[in-house]
Image 1 (spheres, one colour):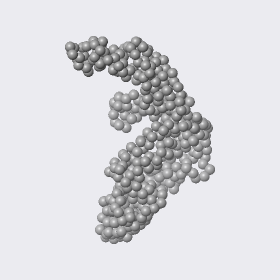
Image 2: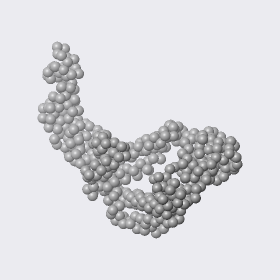
Image 3: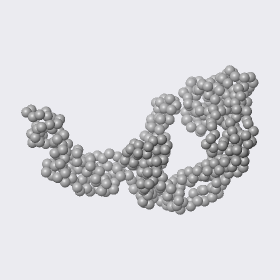
Image 4: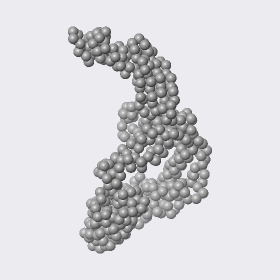
Length: 468
């Protein structure tokens, strides 16, 4: 087989492939065996007519075309591999010549991954603050733990105060019209938690059981759901119940109740260790994100439109899955937010372009540094997945098929590891992204034994009342 490649504009290439006559003849025989079973020829049992009889009955062209369909796909794959091309779309195939006793010639026009011009990607300076946990951090965590394990006492008579958990029914309107998602029943809400839109919870302080209240709030101008941003909403709220926390003293007994520690001192030490581990992980994630961002920003690549559109499609599918969890259709979402599908695709485009560029740059770095997953790494990842899914590793391996996606994921992770290992850590000059990551890490739940109460983590409202 011979294959030549011609590069065109816009990431297009044309492969001209010539397949030897002997291979074409084998395909013709295979095509004959297929077609003879599908044609009823007088005087012959189905599938038993000789080839020359079949040719006389239906002509040579159908057999030649069937042979071409047999030959072209594997020949195309061989040509792609020979020239180390990475197609990103289906090829447009044109048969140039197909005749009995002659080589088959075809052209395949296809879009391939573009070349990436990498910028500097080693020695990148990245803020990497030190792990630092203070006694105040531990105190704050123990306070949160105390809140979690608080006993809830029913308030039969008396007003709700900040810190109480009220169970409410609510229904909201915008511009006098009901708005899907701004409603809920038997919803547990901790007053002062900041779960709802600013001003909502404060207007329930002082309320009593079975009392109905009208709550008026204005959504922030930068609210994540554009159709509600800056809008005034009116809620009719009924308080169904009130519970008040009874906090236990933070002492040795408390330590025994909420953990496997015997003393408060042991608990404080355990909290410190877990907070440090959590903070270290948060900092590591921030470093990985920062170094990838710098490497991607330094690179130049002309993004293929087909890859961008596929990424947009992927984001829309993810949105649909999230909406389904809230029992909202994509059509309802578009209607409620006064969007069209074109509007949605335009909104998703910048993020999709960034995703595609990141993917191409990390692939290029992996190629430049000859980064590939080892068999040991593949086996280890399958074992890890098997533990997560509680399945036998062989079953997981079989379900994964050819392992190409798994290998790709490992390759990308190793490329990011490479960037981190070859970066230059610097201390933050001021409280910035990395330093803020440390603060976020301090609020991370470190104790696996801690249970979540309804008062501590109310479920998300199916709509826009929760603040994000």
